[in-house]
Length: 312
Image 1 (cartoon, rainbow, N blue to C red):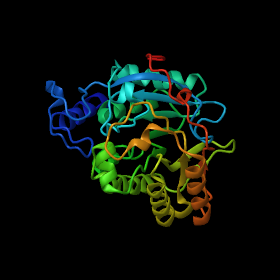
Image 2: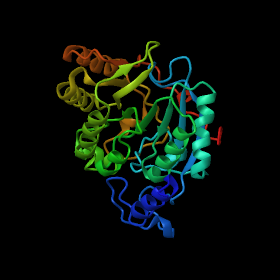
Image 3: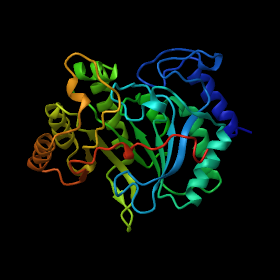
């Protein structure tokens, strides 16, 4: 009998023996203990699984999003606000079955959705856990929360399993992407990824009580000193997708790590009122209607969750 267990063993063997799960394509054998850019082995590691109240209203609402924060990342942004798990890599190792249980426990707590935060490097295990959980009664939408740096082959494995994609589009400038996220190919890879996400989910659909059930919402965190980049991102997204996607503009940038990069001292401060106003005015001038924005002055460390293994 060809069970999910057998199927996923085959998937793990094919994907983790020569890992190309993200665009880094490190080609390391993670099953044998080798580690690539994400610095992680084959088993999923997470740092928190709890109701998360700080996503967009259509994701968190009043019920909360069932957010599972995975450890490690394929970007290593120099300003990462979740650096304690993305860069330092703290996390608790979970089995496939335990991860499925975590999803079901979050649903039982009333979560509006299951929110997979930075899961690409654990995709084989996450896919198995999702299938197991769905067989056992998981019925709320699955949200794939991503930095946007994704490979098309990996995303296609999620077709039919993910209801809502929540990627970033951080940069359209390859130099900026290289300096701040060590990924000069980020603009091309993120644009390709968003195209695939929209293909899979179609236009955005909300429930009668305002929760997102289907579709893609693209986030952009406005960086201090980089309003031009923010405008370029907005223009690309709106001209390419119009109202088929939601756009979420974030102004919560919080300088959690001292920057010593030449030419990037501005990353040691929060966004100014003028910078915020310039980007918001530009969004309005473009005609962006389907979306969300944070008011200026929302930057604070309380937006950064406590990563102490809750819910695992």
